[in-house]
Image 1: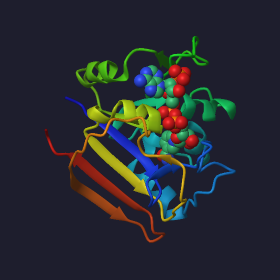
Image 2: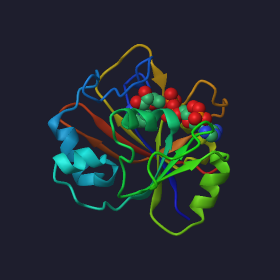
Image 3: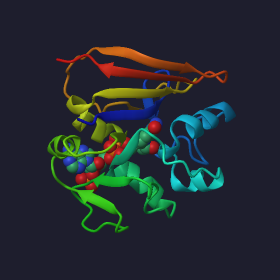
Image 4: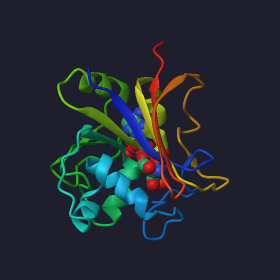
Length: 198
Ligand SMILES: NC(=O)c1ccc[n+]([C@@H]2O[C@H](COP(=O)([O-])OP(=O)(O)OC[C@H]3O[C@@H](n4cnc5c(N)ncnc54)[C@H](OP(=O)(O)O)[C@@H]3O)[C@@H](O)[C@H]2O)c1
């Protein structure tokens, strides 16, 4: 059965974005992006680069990990506001929303159903793993379904912001096994953890 992988950038103090949302790694963002970090994404996770970055970096690789990406409406709308209605045309792209009524792009599937039920259905389909992109609210709703965490830990603290899982997520301690790690010279660390089965 394929897995749900929460692959996401986090600060050292556990935040994925500043308090007001927005794209922390975008043109007006505060998150330093080093050359070796970009190179690591290109080499190891090419399918997770949005289409504009793939074009700018001449990346055409399909990647080996994911064929599906799940996104919350607020994260999706950041790209939409920048004129990108489908940042991942090379993946099956599902956006969870109970308020959007029409998809801005025919390739982007709007899902108003329960994310847990949707993910359980997806896991039984053939294919590569499923990338849970975020943000915190969707990740909180899917907390119980995450099989693997890949944390891209940036060498920064921000004091306050949007945490990895929304504060509405249930208190539900889980333990994880470190399966892989990569330390980059710039100070970013990639940590892969698999969930210890319940
Ligand atoms: N650091 C990173 O790698 C990274 C990655 C992704 C996102 N982010 C950041 O995360 C922030 C956005 O995160 P967020 O937590 O505010 O929002 P989010 O999770 O991206 O989106 C929340 C929206 O998703 C929909 N949703 C959530 N739970 C749902 C459920 N159970 N059923 C159906 N729909 C559901 C709802 O849309 P409706 O209101 O339309 O119903 C909800 O308002 C942004 O600042 C973004 O930059 C960072």
